Length: 531
Ligand code: KIV
Ligand code: ZN
Image 1 (tube, rainbow, N blue to C red):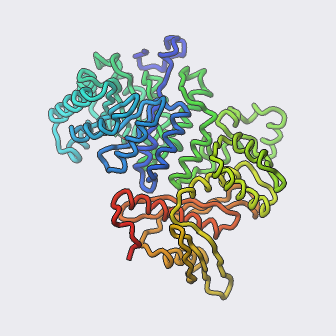
Image 2: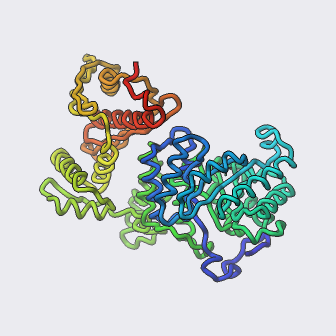
Image 3: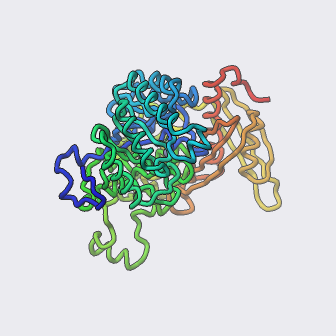
């Protein structure tokens, strides 16, 4: 490992695959899910974990088992089902936290306990109310205890970038001596600059005597928009694990974005000669999956996965692209799984063509789900002149989202216009029983939400109502996301249809269904209709 303060030239890095291998530690399900409004249901977490595993993520941080029974259950189920990745559970330094993490990871093929404590003066004084010696004692005790339960222990110095260097070195040395095999250096508040972060990792490599016994990890937050740059600077200095999240979701401004890290390493291997195990063709779909389950939209100009990341609007650029794609393109869209937008199927397309298209888009549906999706595709093709790949993705994702619903929309009629009080008449199927009502509202969408509350009384806060067009044109499908909150539990519902009002009804009912699942898991007796 290079330990001087200059950026090592690629030729300085030993030419072995292992020395060049950077492990990708995904914390979408822990740090990502921790960000306000990004809560995922149990089933959504499993879907994300399965996808991360298939994509080649090395370590999946599945949650914080002591935080709640829901977190514990999700970590335990992810630990049980994940085939390839190491599954990691977070814990503070207390033995109770560590034991809970170990219990959740019991069935993992490759379990890792990640224990952390703050080491910066400001955190030790105001958050922990602990002195330096007490923190050192906690580091030794927590890591030793975790190491009795699993072989793979990661220790993090929370707020490492604002920690005094001498003290950080002592903590890191002790953590390794106590059995930590990975040492994580978080820029918890997103304060570091790339040069500074490079120097911090270099300092640890130069000064901690047993540092060669552990892998150094980066965990950079994005408060100054530097999370990816800082993580890469850490790797150039000698770190070999990067902690990141899909779409960069996470506390406040988020974490380093996995897709940006992976593609920067792939596209610029001339300057950063490192390898990851990620199948980059799965990145675009990973981004859509996480955006769908959290309801967090991906900004249009987001690097790698934004809608515009590979579009060329200006005449000069389009002309250049037609002559040679390398004029304005540093990576092919297919590399990240973006396929040419194609005019796919029409209303005359049959089951065979539809099944082929689903396979191409990466879907494997059961026969019943396929039949449902095909019926909805036919209905869509009747309403919409052109059906694109994105339409099919929205339609099938919507089908998957609504598959296990207790409540579903049977019929909806909305009257609205100038000088008319908007009203919505709706029939819902509530666990198989038809219920109908008609109610007015401040607008058509408000009337729809009111009529749902009339038929199925409940009290929730509507935190987000968001409409996106799936493709271009006035006949485009609307993709509606809704976030509901009840007693601190949040859920995100989605619905897609060529009619925005119908999509809104689907999205609200989908969110309500998820809330019912959460209520049922936490307290079966509260499942009765709210008064
Ligand atoms: O940002 C941070 O410091 C963390 C730690 C728990 C690793 O998320
Ligand atoms: Zn963090």
